Image (cartoon, rainbow, N blue to C red; front, side):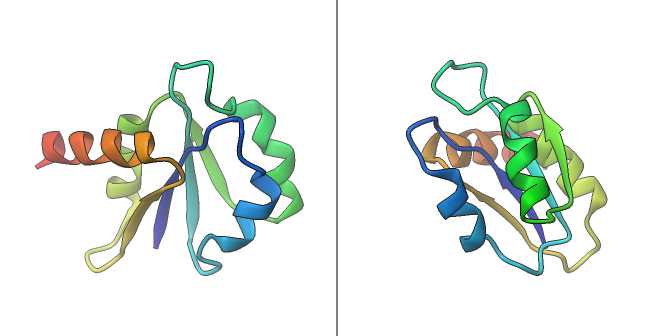
Length: 97
């Protein structure tokens, strides 16, 4: 499983991370250009604290493209964190088809 994840600043990230699937192979963290999202660099400490394997991206489209490219035939890709991230992920997925 791959996880494409992004979250806004008002969320308590240390309470959210444990809710992500523990068996995910890689967390593809994406931030929007909007100032309301937690910057990728600020989350590296949290990811390391939880021993997560991750790659960082400046947008959801790139994160999803790499998640798809890194996946095997029957892997799942979860797009989550913020409704904005999910919406951008769905639009990016349509372009990948």
